[in-house]
Image 1 (tube, helix red, strand yellow):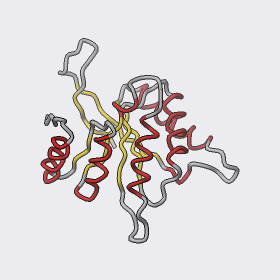
Image 2: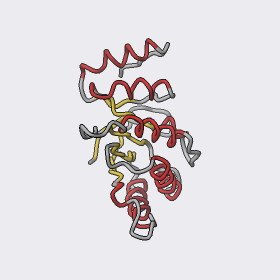
Image 3: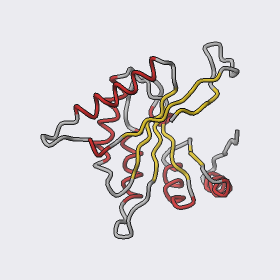
Length: 179
């Protein structure tokens, strides 16, 4: 979907506004029956190139749940896509979509994916500055761990979570700037 956002233009004037598009990374198509990920990369690349060419901020939304593939595989696919569009991905949003009652590894996969993505050296802004972490009441442990690892952008969908995130930041000697 398209979201309005405020950005700085080339003169550092923050009065300009730019639309932002969120593109879902569909990991169900990560690999075909032969183990290739060419179709996924081509589709993501084409979508991203189209939006970058139209001067839109782009956010790649990555679901983390029971079906998430190996974090290294996801990171390689994301890196390939971003490299193919010349670094045009403004943000990567890691969304914690929970787990089934039978699975307890989603938190570990989430943190591992955050780490793998953090290590990427790509065109454009450093990767850690592009990562946004889903911050909700059901994943404050992930927020704490990600913040400890250097995450500095959080997506908050509930005002009740702000105080808890501020407390986590304070316990780590960090400050939260509310805009």
